Image 1: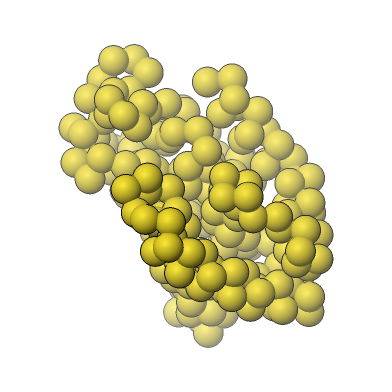
Image 2: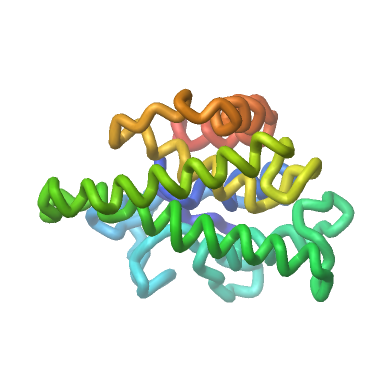
Length: 201
């Protein structure tokens, strides 16, 4: 498999999951501005949507969209328990968490990156984001991970997007449960290895 990634983007999430599962893969860096891969290839030929992450399977098929990728990967090694079994109520809860992260946190931060959006409009998005972070903090005050006691692919995704808070001067320390969560996830060997590999790529 090949994981197409760019540093400091949501592709860190499947990268962490690949390392959690111990699956063999090749890491291919993408320049988000030029849409060229590190070996000079055209990333748009891999993913016409133009953004990472993209996972190319050994048969040549390409899977995009982080929440779909991480669930696919988790199902390759169900014994690792990074995702509950398909068809279970717990799996629906995982999908609920992944959708919340995607629509409320990931998409909630996206406008804050856009220099063309006026500051007063960004303030509206920021206020909504802060409320959502408060909701996450309340959940994590009751349990170690989003789904309870077990680290899952949802945690890899949430950790990834919460790391962007620093770009907007949002101090996660104001939510003690989130701060502890970030430290807990960041201490995992898979996470440290993924961050180190991306820094070196």
